[in-house]
Amino acid sequence: MTAQSKRLNILFTTWEGGGNIPPVATAARQLIARGHRVRVMSDEASRRAIETSGAVFVPWREGPNRPNHDLVHDTVRDFDAVGPMGGIEKLRDVILAGGALGYARDTAAELDREDTDLIVSSEMTLGAMVAAEARGVPLAVLMANVSLLPIPGIPALGPGLPPPVNDEERAMHAAIAEGGRAMFNLGLPALNAARAAFGLRPLTELFAQTDWASHVLIGTSAAFDYPSGVLPPRFAYVGPLLGEPDWAAAWQSPWDKFDPRPSVLVSFSTTFQNQSAQIANTIAALGRLPVRALVTLGPAIKRASIGVVPENVTVRASAPHDRAMREAGVVVTHAGHGTVARALSHGRPLLCLPMGRDQNDNAARVAFHGAGLRLENTAGPAKIAAALKRLIGEGAFRDAARRLQGAILNDITAARLIGHLEEAAAAGRAPALAPAA
Picture 1 (tube, one colour):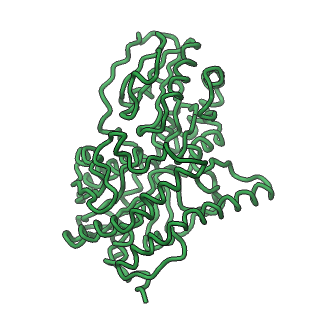
Picture 2 (cartoon, rainbow, N blue to C red; picture 1 turned 180 degrees about the vertical axis):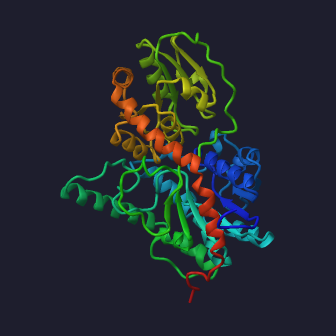
Picture 3 (cartoon, rainbow, N blue to C red; picture 1 turned 45 degrees about the vertical axis):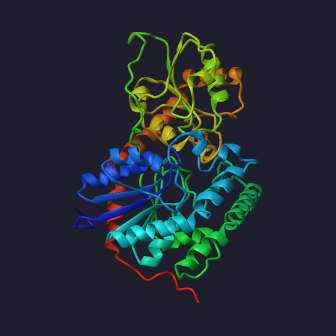
């Protein structure tokens, strides 16, 4: 080992948000292979994915805990949100702030039960950070995608903005960032109530809770993100964490290996986002083109909900995406970070139809780098077919995707996450930010 010579006992804290679970399982595998003990606190619905990684699973008890992946048990239900920020507001009220006291109590109980060298918290389980601070346990924050926390020079997460190019756009971006900050800070009363329960002083900014962390790690490649100049202290890119989900089934291509038609892979959200109409529109577009296509529905969508499927399209509940992407020429996606990063790691251009969460921002980066196209998720078959013709026929998209491929594969091979986490544990314990008066 490098910065850390002893076997560490590491506790991850996260929640069942779909695409954020495979990166945690991947990180756990890497750390276990390094010789460390890993526990993961998450929703009961995450148990299989976590235990398959080799980590010890610990369920939330007082914090929000989705028991399984049935839609009726969806914790946040952002697909019911109203308005452009409605989904993020739900996330704030249920997970970030509303769940803080329960997460803090559960994490503190686990820390009291078993000595822990380091907590690795999702940027969204702020309550776990409260417990780390109160107990004086070293903390690292791990984001499974582009940064939710502000980085100078990079547009605020949410609307999917490109970098500003003039003073007018810079002013607009600043106003949007301030609006987002104010929106998140509406969760301060709930977070500060959790802090008060542990004898900690109140904060004036919601994300100031992350100040306890010695390391803030961004689970994407710097090459994929916008150029920002210098990252804030404590921040570092660690590359995407791209393990396959535990539920991906084996798949055998139904097409002859000499079939000359270009291959397309379609993959929308792992979790429910009312994406059946988008999948159906994409399938209808594919039926108009001389291509062969694999559509993976994921666990949230049933085959019966997408209607008629043309002969050049095959639909499966799941398939191993690494294998499918080796064969595909183009990937159509909602632009979740895992699917985007995996496609680019194979040098595949993307057609992005974002539906919320971090997807607008991932799609904007794909377009910014010239590695694909972005459409509204309401785009019909004609627009989707026209975009696919461009992606298949214009080599500039493939060239841009392959440029990103090299940087992403270098980041994956470097496995920087381990070194940063060992360094965070080696930093030792520190006093809490300040006790409550």
